[in-house]
Image 1 (cartoon, rainbow, N blue to C red):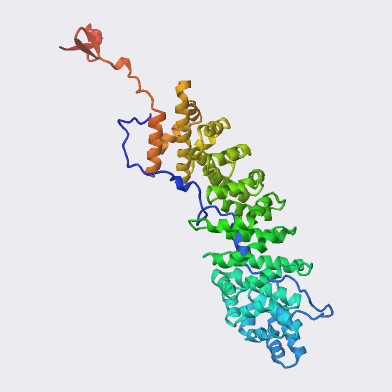
Image 2: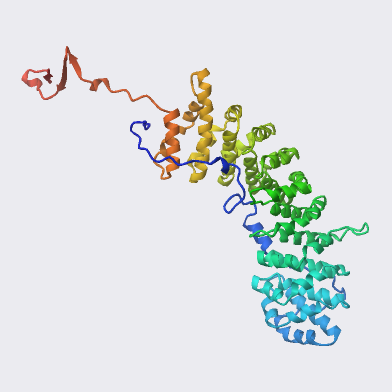
Amino acid sequence: MFRSKETAPRRVLKKGIDAEESRRKRGDGVVELRKAQREENLQKKRAPPAPKGQDPKDTSVTPTVSAIPSLLQDVSSTDPMRQFQGTRHFRKLLSIQDNPPIQAVIDSGVLPRLIQFLKAVSNPALQFEAAWALTNVASGTREQTKAVIDLGAIPVFVHLLISPNKDVKEQAVWALGNIAGDSAPFRDLVLQCQALGPLVRCCATIDGVPPPMTLLRNATWAISNLCRGKPQPNFEVVSKALPCLNYLLTCTDTEVLTDACWAISYLTDDTTTTNSKIQAVLDSGAAQRVAKLLGHPSTSVQTPALRAVGNIVTGSDKQTSTMLDSGCLALLLPLLSSPKRGIRKEACWTLSNITAGTEGQIQAVIDANCIPSLIQLLRSDEFNVQKEATWAISNITNNGKAQHMRYLVKQGVLPPLVDMLRCNDAKIMMVALEGIENILKVGQSDAIKTEENTYAAIIEECGGVDKLEALQTHENESLYQKALDIMQTYFQCEEEEEDKSLAPQTVGSEFTFGSSFGSQSQGGTGEQMFTFS
């Protein structure tokens, strides 16, 4: 039985979804495309997986921890050959793939000597082995990375970025990428040592000769690590990488594109009120190139490109329009059917920020034929994807025209939207309720012509009234109130007809009530009549 205006208890009305909430910046607990695995991969430092630049004649066996005292004697020697062999063996020991003895090497006290070897300009082979060993030490725990930093390694590695030896240069890039990737404080130390400029130059083509691909990949990764992290790096400093990143986005190598896109996604994670970071990326031309990469065949590129585009459309309407003009909607549509749940979710989140914009932007989403796919995800995908699809649909009802809502209904949006009222997320339930209410308002307006709110009828047919009724016992007052208001406005039923057999019988101006106190065995009719004049 429906609650009526007269009998339903009243609670204080709390505001539902604020209009400003519809376009959602990233934040703690908002959409997370880089799931735990991606975060772990970035936190782990790159340790060189296999020897490179090594003398092919070297057939020595990888030493064990028990050899450390002997190796320490070698690196402490004044004989250049013993220094080289000892350093190489330390590097081999640290290159063991499973549980390298990093702490044992640190405890041996060899690190200061290795850092001293980094400065051996006349012996690049020794520099290289020392840099490689220290890179692997920096691939350990935070305390182990700190052991390298505390000995003054960062400025030495930065200086090696201009080494004429390509192997030494690349190993320095690798080491700095490890340090910057460990944490925001270590990242800032690398930036303070002015590593970004030399790293950018490592990506440049000089005299028509491009850098080796391995160097380009590592430099892009290191630059990306300098742009990432919370709290965010000084944008004025890292934004100087934008021209380089814009260039890197033209590369055909998937690994370079992936890290360049991640860097742009970090730079567009704009928490300023003026959206100045987003604007800087747009002005560089990098955002438009990232948008094109939504169509890249590799999901490793699609993922950060989508995150970057999603960040940009949290900006102003004008900034969002710039992305739409780049053709991103046509490339977003296939991503709604991606086999990767994270991509489907992020694509929905991106569309939700577009549908939080202008009527023209909503129409562009409709024209791109994104709505059928959104509704399908709302109907049958995992809840984390459904949540974002709910926002995208509800934002259309909040910001669009009546014709947009009629289109949604025609596409079958109401049943799956009503189904979201069964979820356990109060915020999403409110988002769904507001979408339902906005659609019902259009149906009520149309009822002037049709004499019936056909949208209310659809909601009744799919069990919506029962779900609204159930919400009137919900502990969340805002949900209770919103459901009650919708019920009272659009689903008010007639008072139940009284049972006529229970109505008093009238004789003239008298009311008679039958009673079965009499007995037929006493010659009566089985009833005694009581008359009240």
